[in-house]
Length: 106
Image (tube, one colour):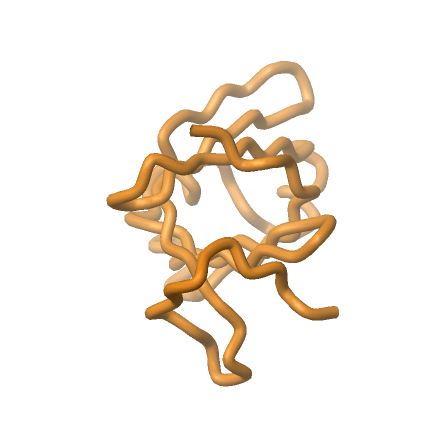
């Protein structure tokens, strides 16, 4: 599946040439079994929301504090989902999470 290019200028790519974008976590709310997050693109007025279940995070051995401690997130955007990658300070490793795609907001 090919990624969906969000803009013409891409300065950050992976080894396969897929465009990567850098985001920061701008908000995180826990409600029942859901985590609601908003990510903002660094130096640009773009953001997106991502919702994940706590049970999914447990399965992936990711804690809410891992999101809060991460300085930034590398995001690959596809037609129906996004791949979030970030450095887990706790695990000293890169964590990867697939989230359903919602449309970017400004």
